[in-house]
Image (cartoon, rainbow, N blue to C red):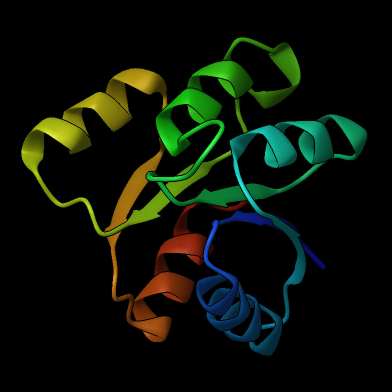
Length: 120
């Protein structure tokens, strides 16, 4: 069963994402921001990382850049799930190494479709 790290500073968003992913058969570990996520990502291997952009301590792009600096995260899909929808932010996401970009509010069916496409 694939293991996904979800990162969001909003408890209600973490709950909705976890509910959607566990309902689709994924195991989920939650993190409250980029710093928490980076620590958890180093502790165990994940099949995918799903991160918000706007968070305290370390945002999603900062987390993505930091993960991509390490060999074990070079091929792990990283999806950004955020309210940010500008082309400039999406370009910054790609430049940081994000695999994909999804805009909140998210459609659970679409989220699962995208994850199935990028997860190994």
